[in-house]
Length: 319
Length: 319
Image (cartoon, rainbow over all chains, first blue to last red; front, side, top):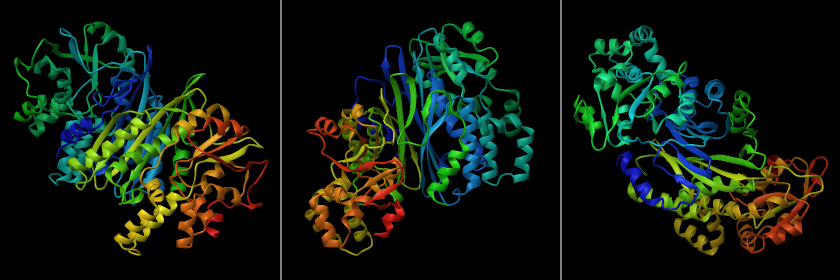
């Protein structure tokens, strides 16, 4: 049984809703209507140590990451974060003052960065480290995962570094490189490892472009998956290429990776993928915060890359 | 290191807040001010299988329980539940259609009961079953854990059954009784086992008495602990005795337990413990929903039971 099947069963089983709920489990956030101009958005994200937390991350970085992963969903709704709650299950290994202090220092610093206070939580003992966060935010105009025909499809900043960082991490984990070599490579590609260690949610960007865009989602599972939420699109690899920073190109050369594949598969980037008919206005509004790049357009029907059918994950795996 | 120490470290480490946050991690819920007459309350509660979930509970009952444990904190604020998010970590044992369906059926039925839709979640694989829920609600008048000098201290309905049910469960788990004997005792004390299996959060009660009470908390850790949140009080065991239903008295006789100790230590009852100067009005307002009982008063200074010093947990353990 895979996660898709589990979610399918859950969706079928959960039947109850009421008039307040604009959107349930289908978007980055749930949307609850308070009144015509006031929506509450909420999201939850759980991190299980074995499955989600590279062992090279420090407790401080883990704290920052659980907050970033959650508020990034708030950013993708174009909403303002309001507060964050986090429950934690600690195994014996982590139940010490040093670990807890560092973890919550990371949470505290990032909550300041996002103006999103940590207001509650629950602590438990368990077999492994698990963090479960819930962020909520407010907006007068929640942005969905969608686009209008003719809209430009755009991405903020850059893609690919997290994939490269995880490639390095797995080489270390599978003993393909020594720890010394890993450290040398981290020093050689500092921005690559930095984006794994301290990703940033694009809160300000989401707020600044709220009235200028038609749809948005955050890139947590990789562009190749997120783009399919827009349903009908054409994208171009030469445009995606412009999103890929120089160090990722270098890294791909050195380790024989296809940079377009890397950009399509790089998850937990927390950049925003959005649709707009006002590219220049968005560009101006984000000046000083983030660069943006067009990678394609929303079309009437079909999913294409470079004029050929886009197979999503399947397409990606063909590389 | 115990949970109190962990929470102390967390509180010290989390420094950032802002003007929206009326109350952080110190009450049943966090309170966020939206405007003068509109507060958002939010709470999170995590259940780890080994630590929190008696193995006699069915998946359906586990689903109901995680929702009840969370919305009970909303009830204690006198707020109306708005929505619920739940993240889940499944081990191989639970990752099957039957388990997931039953679990989420429990969630769905109880979300209907509380008019609190499940709007989001996250699913993960882990070493053991973990459920992490977050409920939020709204109110124009959040009720804190407090009381005014002279207030009556009151409790809804009854206390003691959950303690008895867990006593039975541990007798089974420690092989002191056979499963057959366990089943016989469950049939003999149906309401005792029922309150462990299907506890109910007192949402309607919290809403109905919102303007009539001065303080409130829900009884999740036992009256003996919750009462200390009111700081200065005198309570009386003959009054607490009136809260104890006939079947608990019988059970205590049969198994040589002190019923007052049972009432003070019975957790996850989800009854409301509240302070008021308008006992009769509260009583009238709850007619048809819940009975209420006075157990003592808020005083100037000190904590007393039957005129003697109340040692909280320590006192309780002396029984």
